Image (cartoon, rainbow, N blue to C red):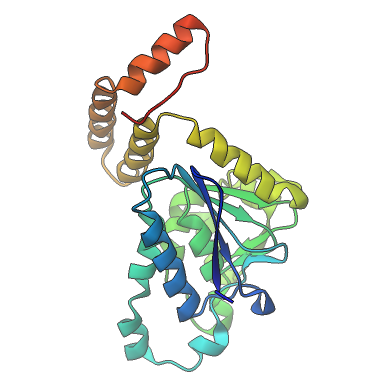
Amino acid sequence: MSEVLLERPSSAVAIVRLNRPEVRNALNLSIRQQLAETFKALAGDQQLRCVVLTGNEQAFAAGADIADMSRIDAIEMYHRHTERLWGAVGECAVPVIAAVNGFALGGGLELAMHADIIIAGKGARLGQPEVNVGIMPGAGGTQRLTRAVGKFRAMLMCLSGEIVTADEAFAMGLVSRVVDDAEVLDNALALAEKIARMPPIAVAQIKEVILLGADAPLATALALERKAVQLLFASRDKAEGMTAFLEKRRPNYSGQ
């Protein structure tokens, strides 16, 4: 059976599911390659509006596959160029929602942080414990975590290997929402369907400006925002949205 499963609850929403339950969805090279291939295939789908990325009830992903990592040296690690595989997730054109149950540790948390929104179950546990096995986060953990929670919490988590609860992660800004464990996927899917009903060009511009503006000087980021707003004023969806508001009806967005 494939280590990455693709489901389509609707034409606008895709579920990408990690499927190595016997090792809590540990991320070996094969599953990373399949994940990248799946996201690259979705990139050409013009009907797609949102992706939900998830694991199972026990784990989103419990980290890198240590058995696999223990057998390779620095040169093989270099040649794997896993940053290119992760990029397929982080560069997805439509919003990605990580639905996290159980463990999201090490590479699993790094994968979740490639998403745009993280919905976590109350029983979820998140952390960057790589230091415990003699290495450090290597797929954006030191950088994305710092940007999400600030220097001092990121230092604490990465240097100590501390694992935090979902509520602690929410309090520090690491997850978007905490729900009951049994409701994680349903909550993520409901949110995905809500986003899918929004004007696609506006959604794309919001995602692009937030991501690109985060590391730009404020004046540059504000200019990006203004240009994006100006572009949207040329869209049919802008006219439809405002007309529907004035007519007190639900808008019908076309992505034009």
